[in-house]
Structures are given as structure tokens and as C-alpha cells.
Image (cartoon, rainbow, N blue to C red; front, side, top):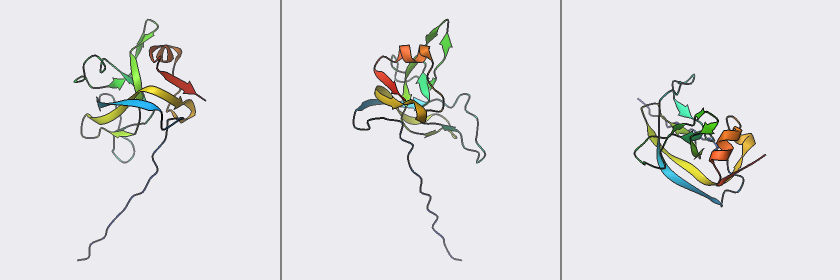
Length: 123
């Protein structure tokens, strides 16, 4: 029986306009509502705008930001793709920096932009 080594190489999706100027916090990324892809993996993509109270309580899982009555609960932007296939997982939440809007899974809404005063979105 022979053994094979399988290596998978991929490039990290860079959402930062200036990768040397940002602040990110370690957070637990929620798996709630994340749908599995064709490979059966549940991936929260880099650039997803997250919120839900994680800044006030670090034990609260960060979930996709929501908007109600014209106010978003956005608290930051997910720095890297995060695999939540097997439940909530560790990720990095950018709370200050310059983000390239063209690299996000969807552009931020006006409410999300207003909720993130320390993040500048650049085309």
C-alpha cells in the first residue's frame, strides 16, 4: 500500500486596501444560517460584515449583521474565510482599517457603513 501526500495551495483573499494598517479582534464566528457549499463545507467568506453584540460581550458569537428600523448592528468585517462546518469557529474581526469594497461578498449598506465609523470602504 502506498501513501500519497495531497497538498492544496490557495491564495488568501485580501480584503484590506492597506494590509499593514488595521486592527482586528479574535472572535467566535457563528455557524447559524450558514449554508453548506458544493463540497459540504460551511464557509463564512472574508469580507462578511458581522455584528450581534460581540464587542460588548466577547462570548457572544459574531453573526451576519442585520438592520432594523434603519440601524445596523454591524461591528466589523471578517478578515479571512472562516470554516464553520463543525460549529462556531475562531476568526478575526476588523474593527479599524481600509477595506476594498470590490473584494466583499456584497457591498456594505448605508446603515452598515454608518455603524462602522472606524472602517473606511474604498472602491
